[in-house]
Image (cartoon, rainbow, N blue to C red; front, side, top):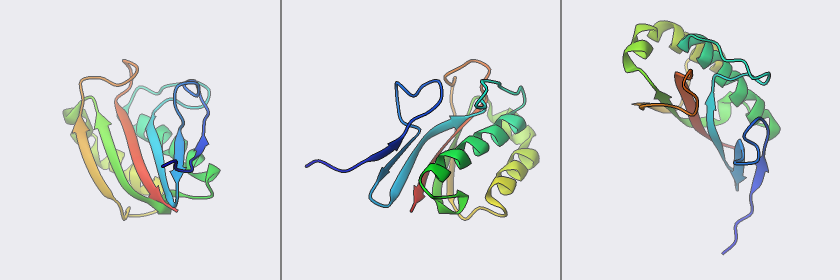
Length: 129
């Protein structure tokens, strides 16, 4: 059975995968990292978190959605100690992106590496439209 998909592609990896794929009223976002649209990557996990959320907001808007549509998110981090050493600022950036305390499920996983060596966090989420 074939399903209908609506996709949005942009950025340096657009030939490899969609940044967002909608199936019915569910939107799946590819993991977003701290690389801005100009290709810049801040060095701190806090600033990378802010950029990742900005990227998420841009993708959500392509589907007429916003951060309030997110129901589940996963943080992939390269250093759990670094995350927890900056937890107030990282989660402060998260709350700022959501406009308050997020009403979402969340999982945090430590990984050996992300797609580029300087990256410290990747955020993947699912939204309900």
